[in-house]
Length: 553
Image (tube, rainbow, N blue to C red; front, side, top):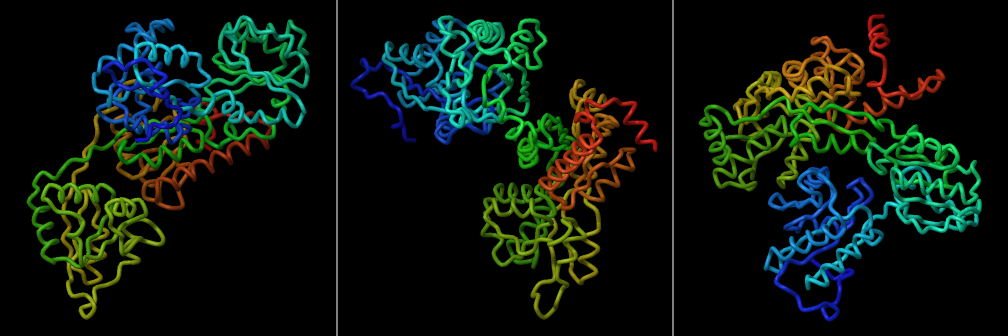
């Protein structure tokens, strides 16, 4: 890994002690999708990560090693350490390791170059003889206003100036920022932010100047309120601010752009909480798509995938696969691909064992799982991604063209007979083999069950009939206010059989198409509310009685 960017030249440092090397890395403004490529490289290589927030530990999972250690700068009781204590903690952590190849990443919010902590902690490392590097990140002061629809380039069009202010700086000369053409960006929260804006107002800035307060910037919890400077100061002073956790305030002309350029908070699912009854291993593409539409997702496993009780049938089928018993192998799920891959690894085989075989996949997601293994499927349905769709494109057995008449189907223990019967009708002999078992997962924690039944979730996305049956079985029915989205007609029918009102059915049997369909439904709901002159609210914010009365009509 290259460490040349912003490195301190060894000649400028005191004699190095036996210690790990430290890299100061910017975490970005909140959305970890804004981590720079270099930041991800350092996190992936880190042996130890020192950070300020416990919430970040789980979020960093995709970019850190499983064996990485995490050190929090807070005390055991959760209190923030003093500046000096944080410096000592970092030095102590680095000197704990005598191997200079050991990498300690000190993760700082936003761009570390803009964080006063960088100077203090880097100086502490220098004094202790610990080598360090600086990896700049995406700056909060620029990115949060942009996510709120207020790019600070708006000051250029007005011919004005831009003043960036730290709310904690008690020596700020506010008289320099009272001109109407000056845009002021104040970084801070709570009392310091309120005092800073009060200072600007008292210095003579027009009370009618527009001010935007943003909290949880660049995340799916982002919220922005716009008031005049006078109204903002009063709201913060009385505790009546719509964004009490605001950490940045924009004062001036860029605020006027928000009505036209707000793009993040106007996404169709923004602020929604979506329930995904699926395992974490299967939900990656779906949760990423949900986040792209501005929503949060909660994954609740409803099934557990386990090996077959008697593996002998699978062992015989794999032997037959290697010895040329089959013409085709049909994969009807990602779990089937995973089961065969794990069996191959157990037996010391690899993808070369598929030489001469034709591969069929029930849909795009299953096909992608094969491609990740280095295998290109020969057959994927062009229409419905289901057993019926696969049968529509599967060629009938031809004794002249097909040297072998047998198909290997590794499937779940609860798979239906639709595909087997259809292939047999076309002249194929089928070895229907249980490759894995699906069992109902344990019930989720009580707070999750209450959230499901109490309407805390805005939507639930069902990806199969089994997810419907199992979710209702382990957690109960979703609240009537919750939008129910199903991946296809069969899943929708199962949901209806369980007394659920189905609002969305995806046009294509894929998790991405399902989320797209949910987003389109949300867009229509918002447009209908606006046309009726009603406020746009999330399903979880609706009155249950009103929704139930509509569902009875």
